[in-house]
Image (cartoon, rainbow, N blue to C red; front, top):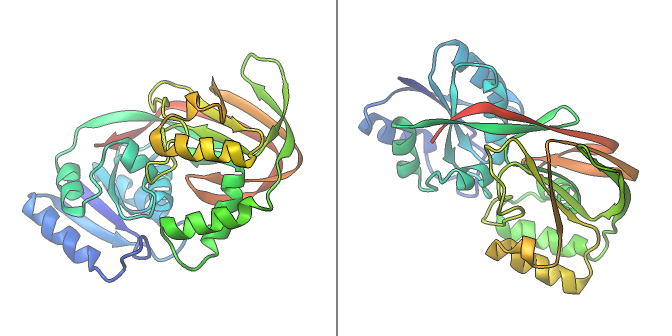
Length: 289
């Protein structure tokens, strides 16, 4: 079995490590046949993953954060290769949900001797996501976080707290599969394939990545008393019972917003829009875990 490690050299907060050398050391010790291919620009990981799958690699490993994992996974859809993960990001949401070790040597050992399973994949306005997507405040913060110049949880929290004082909810119409239209407001509307954003912030702790359904978390407003409940619920995995959010499940969702709302896929801001279509593709991606 041949592996290909697709390495994003800019991922994570510790860029002093020679990650390629560490991958070589531990993959060699595990007896693997492998290649290492560094990315050079945004979107490159998807291209490299598709090429590696076409060349016969059985496992193509994303070495990076959630954005790198998303790109590699997109490149593997419809191929005979499985996604592996060596987490190197600041959140590592999908890796945490799949119980991939955050320690590099352990993650390499795991991916060199994997078991295989299939997981669901989501699409929002044609953009694939594998962990979470969402509208509203989380997408707004994702956009500013990408511009902050530094990575890590501390930077994300700082941006979120600063923007919390100014952000206001947007009126939306929400249509779930086989249900009537709901008129509501959106402060956050998260579409969760997996249970968490990353950093063990559990936006949908009951989400099942193989059940053919997305878990929707709707927060229509966030006054300070509810913000405290939501924060505690995210940290403890108790958000569904906290009284801070509403939860639904659906495979097909439509949203129409009164004014443009930003949206993200796997933590990366994409664009603003007023109309959204969200679909789930059951068991669309094979993973090596």
